[in-house]
Length: 176
Image (cartoon, rainbow, N blue to C red; front, side):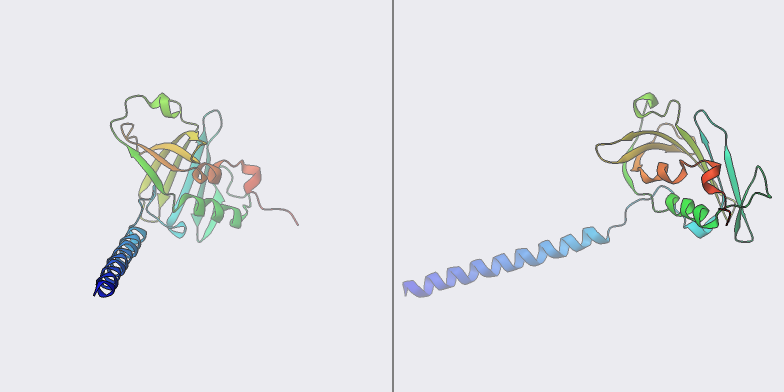
């Protein structure tokens, strides 16, 4: 009789453990399907124009005409189309790690004098402006605000800065 009770207790324990395991896996999958917010809600092929201005530099501005990128400062300058498409890809899918609201001190995030100001125009003519501030090396993120909303600061993937930290020389077509 004692042996049957022990077996019953063990069976109940195993059943409870299996039920808990099932629900933890199910909840884990629900978290995985949860979509993360991205900074720019567009795909690379929907970008029509890009420009960026470094804090102490000159603006680089580009437009896509008939599927080909051109430099606004010299339409005859031949650009490396792959390099330009790589820049576009670097602007999309930038995950927002954290959204800080009611910010009063932009200097705390390096946004009082942004390191870069990025402007992206999509094929519908909608323009988004993003100011890039300090990097947080501990978590490989970058502080930004967009569309002049200085009260809301986002911590985003630092790859955004890498995508636009380019000189015109790097984007020119290579001579063969």
